[in-house]
Image (cartoon, rainbow, N blue to C red):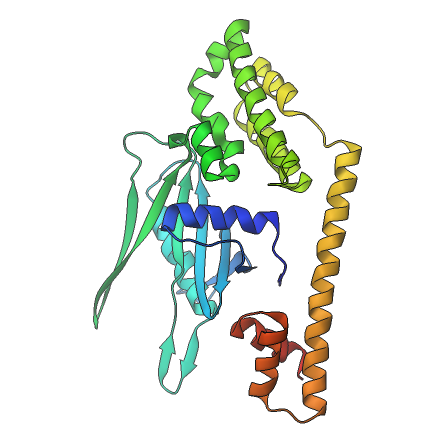
Amino acid sequence: MRFVNTPYDDVFRTLINEVFGERYSGKEKIVFSPNEHFMNRQDGEEGERVSDTSFKIIAGTETKKYHWECQSSADSSMLVRFFEYDTQIALDEGEIKKDVLTVTLPNSAVLFLRCDDATPDRMKIEIVTPGGTVSYPIPVMKSQQYGIDEIFEKGLLFLIPFYIFSHESRFKEYDGDKDKLRELQREYKDITDRIEQLLNAGEISEYTKCTIMDMSNKVLVHIARKYENVMEGVKQVMGGKVLDYEAKRIKNEGIEEGIKEGIVEGKAAGIVETGVDVGLSDKEILDKLQIKLNISLQMAQEYFSRYGK
């Protein structure tokens, strides 16, 4: 379980702010949950389902759960899968007090990489229960509706690898016309220049930059594999393998983050152990954890359960 913010966390904060209208600042904690869930079947067997991303955002004393799926295009089984994922995510952390089971469904959304007139703008799950009917929305994000200027203006850098989908219908044209292919290359040269500017300004890390480049190349190879000129032309601009010096800087960033996490973990262990030794109550220890580490009550409880036994 991670307690140190990473560029990956920032990606999801930006997306959540865009889709759900939240105003997360970057000071919140993101805790990712296992993507594998086991569904109980009527025949008694368990079936495994893997969701794209499931995580919590902890802001002070408030915690919200989110479930995010990335889909090539809409299909009729999408809502069924969402319902299966959401209910299992809720059950994973359900609480039974006396005779009441409480489950909290996550805020769910989907990113469609391809869209047309039939692609919905919003989906909804409606549940008819003996106690009444309840429903919740599944917001839809369509990557092809975002131009490159808007992507950079809103900081939606996660969408850059999927931007190539907006050109997919013209691959054959680019592949057979060198002038039009050069236009595409110029556009991607502008994208790489903007990413480099963000890096030089300290707004993103080398790790984030290389991740965007690597993901962009992987998506490109997947959808343009039949068009060699397009694939090689864009890859030439975006860059191929991560350079040695970049790899070293990425490694050092990871080491630094690990050191920070270790320091926090060590401080938490010391606070709990000292509190237990001097006979402080559980509440007093939790208060000290929150104040000295500037963390939420939920995180303090997690540290206490880890080091207080």
